[in-house]
Image (cartoon, rainbow, N blue to C red; front, side):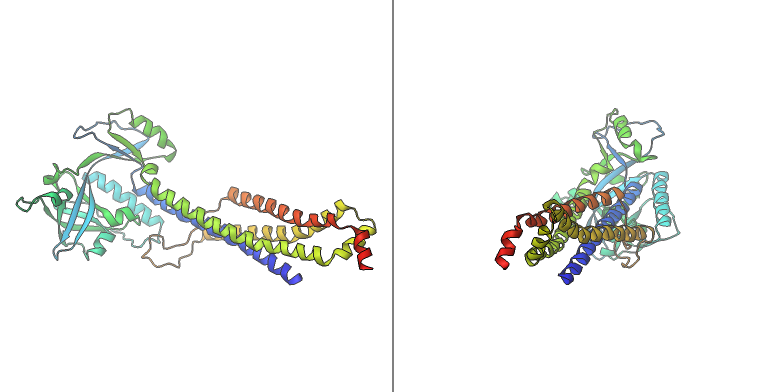
Length: 385
């Protein structure tokens, strides 16, 4: 029983510690993704109705960039194809976006690629390309590609397809899958003029908030304008964050079940004590130990094992998670969007885990200890004699 008790103690300790560390690491990864989205992805996107442009005044809550967007096919000189989404800004607006990317890269040295060169001028016939598109098509800066509207696929063989040849001026690394794998940037004033009647054209404003707390207020203000639709970054990325939430939930459930299975061994210890020490319990009762004190004694025995393991596991889990939060592990290669292993400690969640674990431990120790109430000293000692 002593060996089983030690195994139970360490299994519960390890289960609680790993449970907290894994969930806090996933919190850190989610926060890392969210921080990059807030910086690089538009906080609010407002779409025009058809070709009816909407004029907006300067507002201290946000900074707006007018954009044109096309769904295009990119074709290389050696015949490789790939779908993409082209976004056009004015020269100053694209420089604003590139400055935000440069600032983010300076703060996060674990980016897959980092360059001090922040040249952001896109002239006529020049584009900036996401790094994953460039890698999949084996493109380098200075290469020439052909851009074709997506509706060209529906044309008959007798019709001449619309296309434009452009040069890759810059390859951009944002560490956001949607941008790196799909995005093309161009100067909307001088490039892709022949595509302005394309059926896939979408126009509107991209807004970046100066304070994320003003998100709901800014959306309400923009909806007073005749935009076709106003969408926040939370709505746009709702599928991504729901998938991350489900992933964290499922991992938490399996780790929680592992902890429950490990803690069941404590019930085994109590059950063995009840079965092997019945005579000793009967003698204690004969000497005057009441049923309530007997129940309390054996409940405390289980709680000493379980609560000490839960407490030490919680302290170790939170401490290691704090260390990872301050010193993210740089052990993954830079081919991943998150090459580091960060963490984000939520003390409220840790307190909830400790409280729930304590409650379950109390129930798990109380009910096996109730078996002592069924022990009748006179009958048991008489049978023994």
